[in-house]
Image (tube, rainbow, N blue to C red; front, top):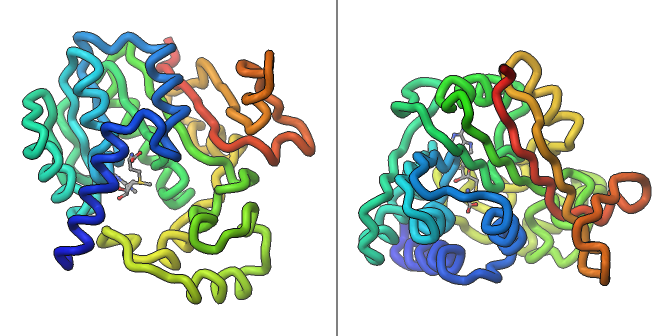
Length: 257
Ligand SMILES: C[S@@+](CC[C@H](N)C(=O)[O-])C[C@H]1O[C@@H](n2cnc3c(N)ncnc32)[C@H](O)[C@@H]1O
């Protein structure tokens, strides 16, 4: 990986770690702080990427965190970030959970912005694998931008058009190519690959992926642009046309008992 790209990735991951307002993780952080007490927990950060959130968990709670990812470049940056900040309650591993799962059980498994990157035929297998790693009273926290969201294409910052996932595919590919940039990653190494790797996840597809996993949805919050309005903070507006304003879906999964 070019040195400049490594440095760029490290700076991005560090911002995700230290900046409470880091763009795509701001609401995740607020919600996690408000809703969960993670002291004493064993946490698995599944699809930890470059590790910003992994270090954030490890710093904000007295917990043990394992970050795993299938992308070796992401793990290399995560390990550099960990060394820079000298955290000892974190471990990063390049690992495919379907081939070589880590040793469980974990009390809390997080998937921050990961589920929408996993092919839909693989996602059910991932949930089944994670269910076997989860402690009986454990929880899985999943966050993702649903496909109808203004930013679901993951390229709005470059293309400048919210909801551009609804443009004709050849037109959008051409627009992305015009402003394409290299990204850290063996799998999604530029903007075109990042866009093409998306599985167009919606809540309905997520529910289907959970079938037969032994996991049930215990809680759901659909975070919308409208939640900024006075008195609207906790409202989930999921019906047409307001569902188009949902920027993140948050779901907590538990085992069936
Ligand atoms: C958008 S990044 C999110 C990273 C991190 N969770 C965060 O919130 O900053 C998605 C990550 O999921 C990882 N990923 C995709 N499929 C995976 C799989 N099957 N197993 C583990 N990680 C996976 C990618 O390599 C990438 O690092």
